[in-house]
Image 1: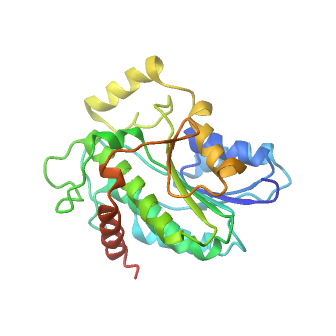
Image 2 (image 1 turned 135 degrees about the horizontal axis):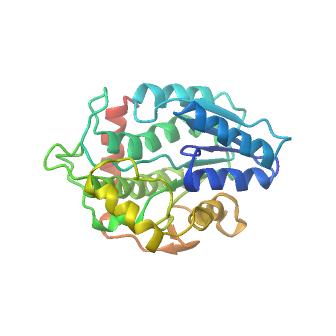
Image 3 (image 1 turned 60 degrees about the vertical axis):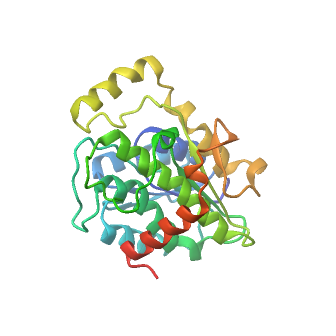
Length: 277
């Protein structure tokens, strides 16, 4: 990874931060996004300690807002090239709230940020570049209802989160189809149930249950980051495109996640919502 430029969202904590630091230790230059400056400063200090020779960069913004997604993509798009794009930003919310774009915030952050950032940065990704998106095994409990993508009816945090993770796989599937023959690959992954701060501050009884389960069933962030690192750097997957991975191996997602018609429809709806032709 020496000399390569890695762009990663969701890099100020958990598996994203672990992956960023390990890639920096391998010689990569890390460009990441952050919403909280204090946490961004901590991550930047760790990256500089991991690889002081690289000019790591951070871009501040809120990836639940379309305007910030586009602005951040414009800023990052000034890079001469991007070798790996890692879509890892995400959250679990136990109360429904809309962004100022009128999007339910789980859908906005967990799906639309992947869609917008990736599409706007594609011109900077050339042959042999890789796109890695963090999904989840939670997708197995989900089905998409295109008449209610914003979860207006009967909102519940975990099911809505699960739907957003299904969106990640469908997005990857359609993206890989569109990238076929370009030499750019797109894959996604389930990191496992990781004991990080993820979901801790989301509120509600679900947040309490998640926090209680982590010491018992959760794996470490280092373990959770392994598949991200594998997809970002291993020569074994240099030519693999459009797959869903778990524990560094191709895994079988649900039938809903393999629905090509839904993948294309989600792409078209997302492009319309984002104002991207």
